[in-house]
Each structure stands twice: as structure tokens, then as C-alpha cells.
Image (cartoon, rainbow, N blue to C red; front, side, top):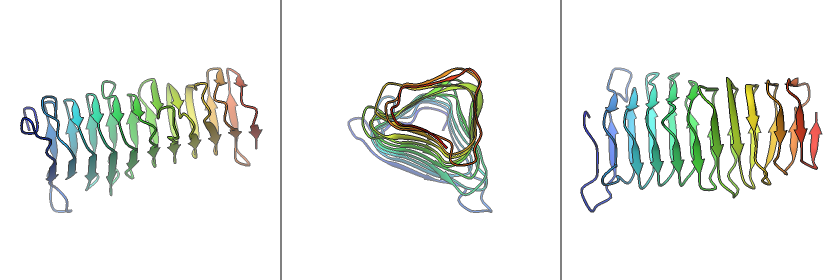
Length: 239
């Protein structure tokens, strides 16, 4: 689609796109212009190989993308989603969220593709979870903020990059399951807990301002805070 993509004026319609769902198909989905910038779509469902949004995204409902045949996903501009974001697939393609592609959602944000994620933009939800099931590499300084309520942030694999990651999770929890290798990590004075269940190597000084539990390590892990570590949590454990 070389132009914009909108709903009919005064309506909020959904769109399903299916191309390249089988091993013999080679269909991709590319939108050059903005989506829903004039009249929002409701739900947008895409089943394809490569998926590329050059313009902005504005939906009243959910964004659901399922790639096949090792397809990649690319987001180049801001996405304002009124529902959930689900990025899934059965291959090893890469999800690239470029620096201008800040995501704002009113539902959960989840990634479940066997390939990795290059994250260079912020993700904000309204007390809803953010989860990454595969390796995340930061391409820029990034903040993930789930609001003041019980929205968890979960990294099921590694998180790396010579950048700073900010995590804000209200009354929820932040969990790093795999190894963490970052330049910096920032937090906010809210009630969420943070758990490192793998190795960690962070260059800059880290002050854990969160007041929930802080768990450093999960048995035989090595955690290195080269610039020093300060914790304000009354429940800090080193395992």
C-alpha cells in the first residue's frame, strides 16, 4: 500500500490481511503511508511474511501480527493502539522497532517470535503487561512504562546493548530471566519489584528507586555493577 490506510469516515472498521501464510507463498505486507491517521481502524490483523510499517499506526482496537517463513517486522513511526499488541510468528525473523516508533497501548504488549528484537523506542501501557519471549537488543536509550498499576514487565531471554534501559512497573514486577548486559538501568520510586534471575553486567551506577522487593541473582549467577549499586528497597536479597 503506497498511500495511507484509513477506515471509512465516521466508522471504525477492522482489517485482516493474509499473504504468505504457507511455505510456498512469498507475500509481504508493506504500508508506506500512515494507518488510521484520519479515521482510525479498529482491529488490524496481519498474517504474512515480512511486515513493514513506514508510517504511523493509529488503531481503536488490537494489533495482531503473525509472520511466517522467517519473516521480519519493522516499525518506523509511532503506534497508538487502543487495545493489545501481539507480535508472533513461527520463524527466526527480526522485529525492529526504530527510534521514532514509540508504542502507546491500552492493552498488553507481547512478543513471541523465535527471532530477536531490536528495540530503539519507548513502550507505554495503561497498567498492562509488557513481555518479550526472545532476545532483546537496545538500539537506543529506551523506557518501558506500564503505568501506576499492576502491569508486569518480563524479559524471558537476554537483554543487551550499549544503551540505558528504564523500567517503570507501578505495583507490578520487572523480571529479567536471561543475562543482562547494558550500559545503564534506571528505575522509578514506585512499589514494583525487580528480579534478576541470570547474570548481569551494567556499566553505569544504578540506583534502584523501586520500593518493592529486589532480588539479585538466582543461585550461581554473577552480577557486576561497574559504577556501583544503591537500593532503597527494604527487601533486597542477594542469591
